[in-house]
Image 1 (cartoon, rainbow, N blue to C red):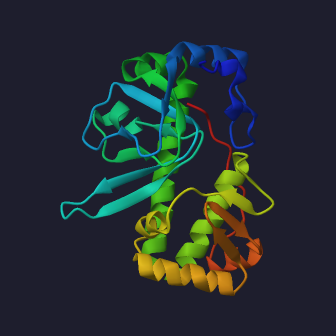
Image 2 (cartoon, helix red, strand yellow):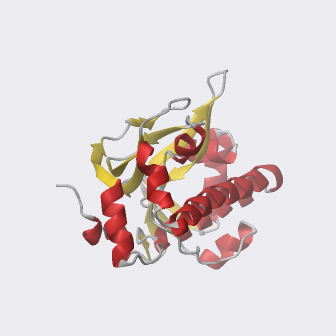
Length: 242
C-alpha cells in the first residue's frame, strides 16, 4: 500500500526538518504514488526528460554518468530522503543517471506539478534551492578531496561523511552502518583505482580505524578517522523533505 505522508518514516528522522500539518497536506496532494524497484533498476537516465520526480523512501542507489570511453564516474550515493530528478525538473533533462543498488521504494511526483507546488508557498521554492545548494556543496567537497587529499585521507573522509549522513537519517548505530555498495563504487566516487582503494582500506583496517565486512562498515575510532580524513565531526544540518 502507498505510504500516506502523515505516516512517512522520514519525518521521524533527526535529519529532516519538521513539517506543519499544512505542509504534510500539500505534500500529499503533490505525491501521485509510489514505485518499488529491484536492485539494478535504472530509475533515471542521463539525457532523459522523465515526467516523474522521486524521493527515496527506502533503499539506496547511485548517481553516475558515463564518459565517451565507457568509463563510469560515480557522482554520489543515494540515501533515504534524497530527491531525484531535480535536474530534469529545472533544466528539462537529466545530466546523470540514477540506479538502485538495493530494492528501493520511491515516492513519485509529477514533474509538471512542480511549479504549482512551489508557487503555492514561496518556502517550498527556497527548500528546492537549498537542496540544489547542498548537492553543489557536496560536489565541491568531493572535488577538493579528489584534488588535494591523499588516497588515505580521501577514503577516511568518505567514511566519516557517509557515517554522519546515515546516522542522522537513522540508518546507523554505534559506529556501524549498512553500506551495500562495492569498493569499485567508492573508488569511482573518489577518482581512485580499485587497486589503490583496496590497499587504502586495508591500511585503515591495519590502523584499527574501520572494518568492512560484506555490506557492514564499522568505525572503531571516529575522532582518529576524522583526523586522518582532514575533516571535522560536525553533525549534518537538517534538511527539507521534498
